[in-house]
Length: 324
Ligand SMILES: [Cu+2]
Image (tube, rainbow, N blue to C red; front, side):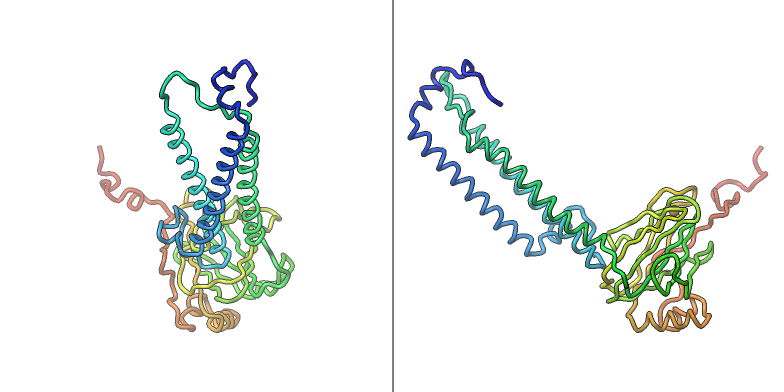
């Protein structure tokens, strides 16, 4: 903001009438700010080097990601939060310092710094720099997470429908590839998606009816599943942790949306190959899981009764026909 010359009262003009003193003060101020900036940056690197996110509960971001992409997104969040806190602490410090240092002591107007070019320059450049750095790292991580390759190790087609999932193991990428084995969820059985550690995995999503969303919370990622000819594709460069992880539909898709669960079972590559061979030999998913020493049924979630009857819809109510 540029003030008119009539805004500046005589006492202020008197104070800034000594250009040498003003110049020295400005240089000292700029030096301090530069020092703070360098110190803050060093602190940021130091803190992100340690696992500071775990100490603060991930600053609200879910922890325990099971893919490198999940870890990168988590790291971006932690670094951005620390940067935001550093800027916040600096600004709060300046506010309180000004409030105390320049509180009203008399009727004399304090030194006016409205036309201080280095300060004006700093006000403009610093936010642009901060936003640029955040944008730069966000673009890098986003590109990383969205990257698809020509020849992933494993391709699985995710077919969503109201209100369950089908997982087709494919022999290639794209709609022209063939399904070599399939797992279909039913009202009685939660579909278990078996995938290996240490291999790149491509998910090709399509829906039979409305928009759904494929979400495994531990992958810290979800992607919408669209009907029609759309194949929404994403990849993970590998899964790093063996285990059972619940998967959900994350797009409100109708009455039983909240019950549209599946399980991701991450196993070793050897077990995965045995599982797929068993499936190709005609075994059911449950039999194939048992053949590799895994639990046949989902352990992280359970089937829900989707057929509403008087008794299961309102089990506490009196038997039908007993009312007046
Ligand atoms: Cu859904």
